[in-house]
Length: 422
Image 1 (cartoon, rainbow, N blue to C red):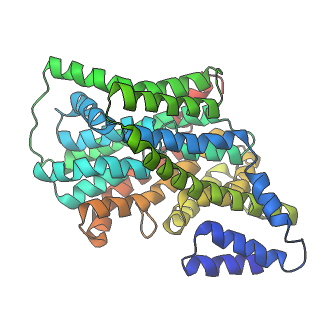
Image 2: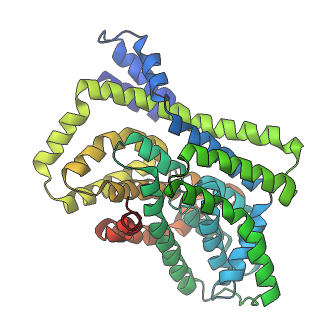
Image 3: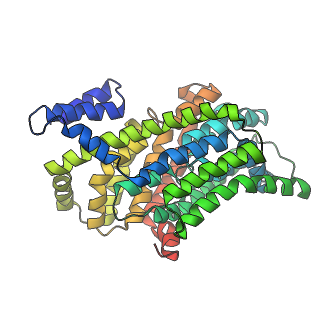
């Protein structure tokens, strides 16, 4: 009780999630159940995993690729593929996020990199600035769903019966389905003010394809080598860093040696914010398991819910609500150890459930008041949060419809993992 009250109070006054959890555990330990020396032991034990190294490495690879001049090449590739369609620039925005997803795996990085180009460009072509910003934020949600994805690696670390390759494969179709749904929406929504765009000639398309294939080789190798069992996710992440360095320094030559200290520092900062949350939540999960809290919750839920469909509806509602107030990775670390065993008990496919959880919490990136992508897009567009919230609502509804589809048509998620034997 004292831990829960302490945690809620600290979060309410704006304390960082990791410190709120750690101080809540200190309050629990002060009751005399354990010695204070057990807390740092459990924090370090929570980080004692080789797979965790993949997280800072993938963050660094994404930072290097973003600084290597790939953004314009990715946009040119998407432009060659869909730029001539109706609402062409809006379509390019969406499919650039799909391509970018395989490079950074971060929705916030996607919003920042692509938004700086697309928001002013779309405004020049006649799109409202708030619409351009909202579309950029909404399409960026695709980033953590399509592999390689940091939330997927974290989810696999939390659970014991879901593999990284299975989740990587499971995210591909839902991510593409989300892109298609957003594309259908903008095709009809922007018909009144979108200007027609010229179609690229064959020479321009081939050039865009060639320049786009170089960065795209990285996710293809990363995912392919993991699926083939050649490397572990951590080893694949280290290759991704090496490849990003080579492409940036020697192929595109837009990355300078003098840029590296700042890039490494930024990657360390971003990684540490993730890892410190993981460490404190791992300690909290150990204490909760010792106290029998997950088992009690599981017994209570199973006593009232015996239908997988009912459970999934309740989980979707709960996760969407949690995404309003808690950052996605933190929410995943806290809730998955409790919810995952219940889902398994009800016969829900663990890979399917994992993608549902990740998809839910990534939608939280565009919902106020904690939607990070919403804040980043508004920082670029400068239209004000009120206009951003109004503009994002149609995209939120589209993403909610896709969530409902993947929830109740599990084959969409499990098709590729089953095809490859996972």
